[in-house]
Amino acid sequence: MADEMTPEQEHPEHDNEQPESGGGQVTRRQFLVGAGVGAVVGAAGVAGVLSFVKPTPETKPAVAQPSAPSTASPVTQIASNVPPTMRQVTLNIDGKSYDLTVDVRMSLWEVMVYQLGLSSSNLGCDRAQCGACAVVVDGRAVNGCTLLAARLGRGQKIITVDGLNKGTRLEELHPIARAFHQQGGYQCGLCTRGLIMSTYALLQKNPSPNEAEVQDALAGNICRCGEYAKVYDSVFRAAEDMRKKA
Ligand code: FES
Ligand code: FES
Image (cartoon, rainbow, N blue to C red):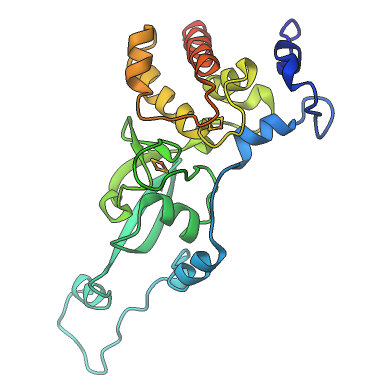
């Protein structure tokens, strides 16, 4: 929008942040929102878990081929081929279906990052205390770090920030992500995706929340950088922008 101030104009304390590219391209700050700052991925963990990645039909778990004709149903054959600690699930993430075999002890965050290579949610505490990993499941904000992926294979709709944004340019961001960017509702960005998803869950149910309702909805999201005032500004601006579009 031509008459809008850029985030740098609105927040001169960030003047030292230079766009990485010109025009409407992504600045470093847009990158913070859109590209995964704070995601903690241990290379060793990746390698270990990827050993049982089954992402494509070609690499799906082999179905046992009996040497003699079997009367067992295909379902029985497949089930008997999966170790007791694994489950075959279909995860619906940001509108795409993923057929996977997951370890029953793995969290949704671990499966999204280690098995699917998705970088659309961050990890903070890994113990349900900070909300950095929040995604929306069937309309509710939940902590991906403590929700077991094996419990989400029955058609539940999982949404991350990548499912909200159409792209990384400012005009392609979802109004909530854009509001966080424009109001400067973040510093390091570790908490931002979780805050955006908690805000999304709130505004889907309540388009005009008051301060107490925002406090309640974001109670599980901790910002270590202490940007709460701007976070609240972002939520109210997003609510207003979304009401105007509705
Ligand atoms: S990383 Fe999940 S709540 Fe902190
Ligand atoms: S912006 Fe750093 S934790 Fe919130």
